Image (cartoon, rainbow, N blue to C red; front, side):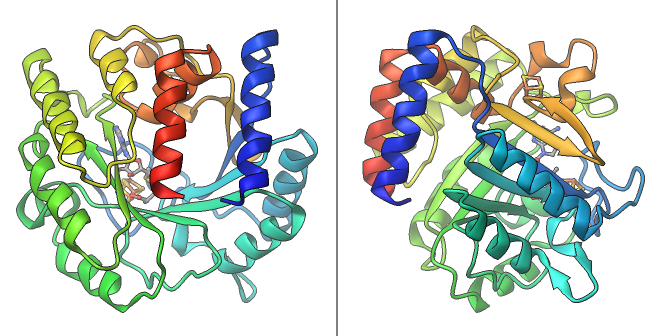
Length: 300
Ligand SMILES: C[S@@+](CC[C@H](N)C(=O)[O-])C[C@H]1O[C@@H](n2cnc3c(N)ncnc32)[C@H](O)[C@@H]1O
Ligand code: SF4
Ligand code: SF4
């Protein structure tokens, strides 16, 4: 991220804290819910099968920008399945950058060609090393690693959703992130128990083990993009939600924080650490702010 953009975001954060503003800064556009996988933990794939039209994506990007949002994510379903009349996600990213977004990132399952040099960060979902990952995402681990090998993108962040089937694989995945030449960092979320996926939730003891492991990996200087204070707040389940700084847009409908916001009781069980981190930051938690600056300097 350019330093002037970081400073502008810091100013945004400061005014949010001082004036208790509820202005969003991060927007996610869901391009489609179509997906080529059916992961065990996921409840948002292949519901309508619709692709957002190019005109509608563009309109929403313009709306977001005019409303002051400066960080943009494209997500799915499988994000990289999106295309229309020769336009691909790469074109969308390019256009978003031209509009002035500071950061334009994508989240992908990595089964489709990862040559997307326009993206600032590619969040690549890997839910463990081979055995754990495949038990959740089907037999896709080797294909994803082949795609990783082929790409020349230099800012790939592994995205792991921790659940009952993979929480013992955190250390192995951290090692892969550190040693693999194409991986820059790793970021964790915890399982959020949408209806039908409750069986994957961690017990309190398992959450404690997972958090202790991540913290110990952080001490070992693994390239982890999570903040320790957010891990503590998650474990205690003491943080304010929904997060007012994030908006999700799906099929022309807007959701504050996440599309999960309307599911009764789910926010109480939320495992999305980005929401915890944003929430702590925007409430002026000094420890979180300090850790954020430290993390920025580490990865800048
Ligand atoms: C919904 S997927 C969409 C993008 C792409 N298909 C992928 O898998 O990366 C975005 C992220 O949400 C995560 N996710 C899905 N269901 C989840 C759940 N119940 N709790 C926490 N994270 C979840 C996935 O693991 C993935 O990293
Ligand atoms: S690849 Fe992503 S959208 Fe598809 S089922 Fe898995 S988590 Fe859900
Ligand atoms: S707090 Fe936000 S991310 Fe977490 S479940 Fe609620 S809406 Fe979703």
